[in-house]
Image (cartoon, rainbow, N blue to C red; front, side):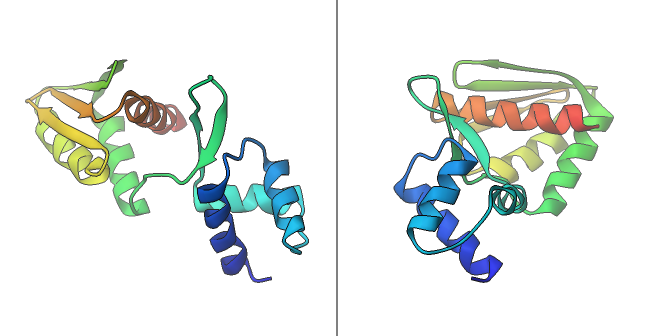
Length: 152
């Protein structure tokens, strides 16, 4: 099976199951007659930018990332690198504090990147407030931003 077909099937499996471990992907694909290894699944997860999101019981499962094209991700990383003062979360809200003069531009990029998840966002000269529709979305984006920040 070609990689693109396998990855399309992985997306389908994500819709049908709450997959918590790479081995579960392997087992489900083998059940469908597709011979794969855990190493192959690991590469697919990385290429597809799958993320783990929390379940109601505190466990985690794989999900498709809500990230936009890499160009915007790189732009976000550069903007955070140049202007971040702090990042915090409370309930459905995530706040990014920046150096003065950076909040508005960062707010526009945040709005573009996360528009489907956001209820709204507000940007000032030195802050971006993101209000999400659901608390788990705020947690997910907060975690993604932390990854971007600490990869620098």
